Length: 344
Image (tube, rainbow, N blue to C red):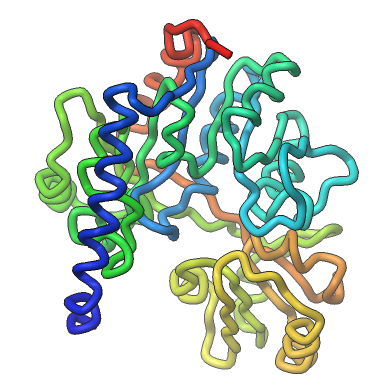
């Protein structure tokens, strides 16, 4: 792996240079960024994935949905449609993409839309008068200037330790972190010590205006399907097929796996084919199948409902969660968005 990185390093330098120039052009106004007269929060990362954007976006939805009309805008990765799509009763994982469809099913009271052109997507959403728009995975989408940026980086895979593509997994140079208002280290051990937290903060070298928080993934105590919930303790010793099509499935497997369980992984956002379904049924035999919530929205209806379940997760703060909440509520409550007039 080290040798491969050395071989790819010249290409990474070229990629870094291109993204660096692009960011300079956006920063100095050579390339136009569009601002909007309402609160816009962008959630994203510097790396190519696996930092926990979905549970963090869901955290924000829960925080805001009871007091504000919340809209979520995503590009709809790997969907089968094009352009702007607003989720409705006919929406599916194919029309929206798995993560936006998960938001739509899980939080029916919010607006969910997809559009690779975030500017166009926001313009369309504004016709529905949202109070706040959450941009899912839009940290590098400089054409829209959000009013607030949340940057995620995973514990054990911090952006200061990584390289730009293709030698590493960063979409842009580490200096891109300077745009963030808040940096969250995700997927931490729940018992991460104060000393370890301080060491990570020193490595990140945040600016004075940046707040740093630490979160961990909290697994539900039950698994679910369309009609019932079952305690994990009840199925713990049953033979199971654990199925995941996410970027880093190891923690999911580790949380559920027992000695006789089978683990089957697919690439992130995998589009399950009929052959895949046949293979899963053959591999599982009579076992129950437990998958991630993101995979469930693509597998529901294609595998036996009485055997297919999903395990929800959520993001929880190790400490100072109330401070994070108040920072977000203060920003949204001010109702000033970017403090700029939106220009067509």
